[in-house]
Length: 112
Length: 113
Image 1 (cartoon, rainbow over the protein chains, first blue to last red):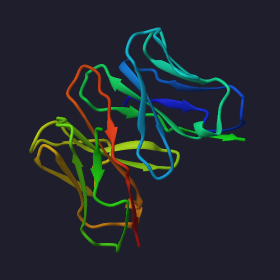
Image 2 (cartoon, rainbow over the protein chains, first blue to last red; image 1 turned 60 degrees about the vertical axis):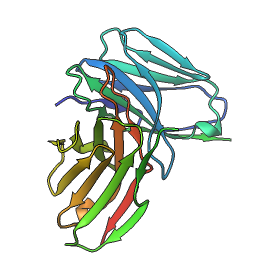
Image 3 (cartoon, chains in turn green, cyan; image 1 turned 180 degrees about the vertical axis):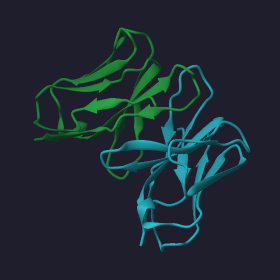
Image 4 (cartoon, one colour; image 1 turned 30 degrees about the vertical axis):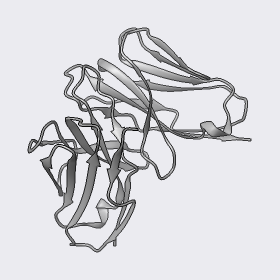
């Protein structure tokens, strides 16, 4: 069974701090997505990374896919209270079945 | 704007009841999924469908069944609801493309009492 391990599970920081969330696996993924979920809502796609070593930026968010396509990270610079939410990584196994494997999620709280 | 709509945001059902959760997407996506989300466990796949009348078990199908009679609609059925099925249920759809990107509904929080 392919697994994605996310860390940390919980993060509470002050506005303006930087943070990194990690998503690790022993398996290779053809692509990896990051989603953000607010309370009472479904997850919303932030980014998809598909190439080993790829780096994508979305304003203050930087996403990286590991060279071996087994891991990924999300870095937030100067976090804002609006960044508060649950961050989920999801991997598409190499078999391209259409199924995604999700990490457990990282709950981020940014205090003003 | 792309949309996945779940029929209810909150449901309270009694143990033993048959429960239907409905999901409709307007993006003409081939793939549709049902997940349940529990704290600390992330999203776990219950069933998915890659075409009309096609279905495949996910990681936790026990106690559930699904129906996909039309491309846009995917229903999750709890044959006999139990308290351990109290959870947040999320429906998603995705196109059949090289890279899977899922679009989610707003979720249904089901409580079985």
